[in-house]
Length: 221
Ligand SMILES: *Cc1c(COP(=O)(O)O)cnc(C)c1O
Image (tube, rainbow, N blue to C red; front, side, top):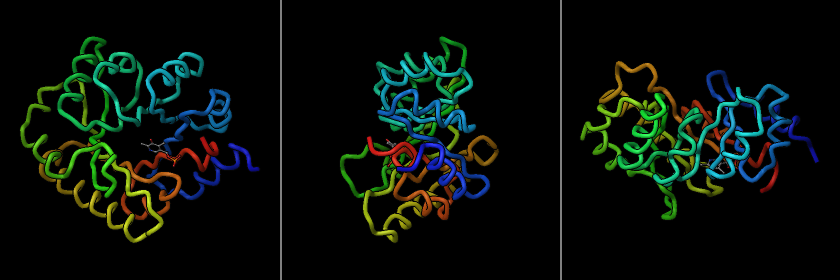
């Protein structure tokens, strides 16, 4: 079995310039994160609030934690004081609550809007039309303690590389539309987060700037 260290470097070696790695450490122990940390990895992704809390408390303070899972509004307050980015915002209600909590601790929290493009019905996320409607509505402009930095999506979990490519290309084209219509002057709106263990090489060809890879680095959960 290869080590976390070897796996991490194998993934990093495959990423083109300009693509960052969120090492997805959910369900793996703090010791696994430490191993990647000692190789220089600083960006980690977790998807459960309680688990993130525990790890945040015991691990080095310069780790950039991304919350990548579905976030319930009543749990926002626990992670907002320290989280670097909330990757999967899929409602105005959640955006408002992040803003409210961030304002209370005088932070501006970076977020991504999550798109639902995959065919699976169980996935969270905004349809393209819902995303357009949220942005056209304009209330988000008054939420000065959140900064929308880009878009996130998960492609269908299938073996068909062409289908994955189609979905990611759609997301990338949609990013360009959103950028042009609402964020043309906002340099910070630049993140396209797609690509997981089974499809991150495709994501790199489809405009991803931030892949989220877990299993390939840390092993099965
Ligand atoms: C678990 C998870 C990942 C990583 O998945 P792997 O297949 O283990 O690489 C990426 N993104 C999200 C949103 C996840 O929940």
